[in-house]
Image (tube, rainbow, N blue to C red; front, top):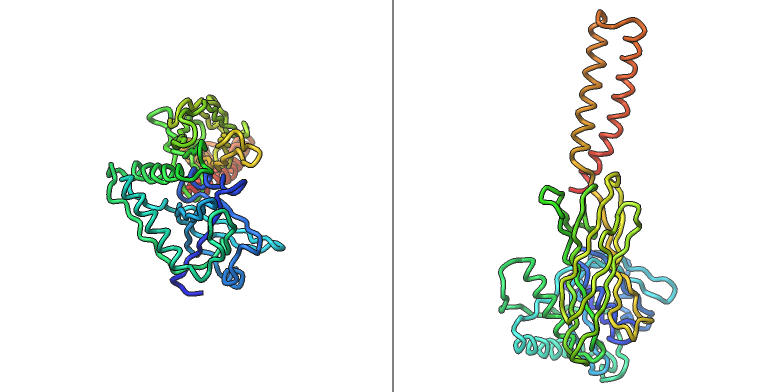
Length: 367
């Protein structure tokens, strides 16, 4: 295995594996997802090097089996590779979307060029890349470097460019019959309801929020044109454990081919330092729901409130001052009462320091 090689994973757009694309498109950068393949679909070069693949970069390329056409989707970094019997299990961290052009004609040219160059580069490795037929391998090492760059962005804002990348790829899927009428979603983020509330952010595969605050969870929804001209109304719902996260607005209806849906949740006041989750429940295609995992799982890490750290620091200072004041000024003590107050101060210092260290640990973790 050479250093310039990356991992190529090629799921087929067939039941049930084709619906994995909706998850791969929905998660933010840094979130983890997984693939599993029977050993017959894994190239021997991967099998012989599975123990040293961790940290390797890769590219997810969906294959339209009906047309034998390739669609590069998203880059990743492999975080886990394991053989379990005859099954190969791969877990990876999602990276950037492939940067297709925002110009539809140029985007089509980019896809055509990719297919030509990709097939030529791997011609000796692929077996039976023909319409309607199975192809092997679906997991392989490759030195192929696609050159796909968007020179037609409609914005300079980094976040808006990410949404544009997402939309360009979703629009490409309308050329694949399997994805006709399939609903795609993308987790945009969580916005605090109050201006002075704690900001939310994505990091290390978590959505970070602050205890005691309310947030608007925003989800981008789109059904690419294809199949039926009209899109049936669809309900999207969010759920949580209700222990640390309380869902205040749990359901929204998407009534067209694209929308931004808003849900509201509250992070309970005493939940700081804990992990929780939100499930986004949606069915990409109702008639094939038996093949689809209907949940988009969002891990949540809850930061503590800063004011609690300040209060506990102040209490620690008060108890410490009281202890030393009584200790060095015995004339102020009142016999047994003075000894009792000094011991109480010492106990208070011990308890507060333990709690303070817990608070500091959480803040160090979130950084």
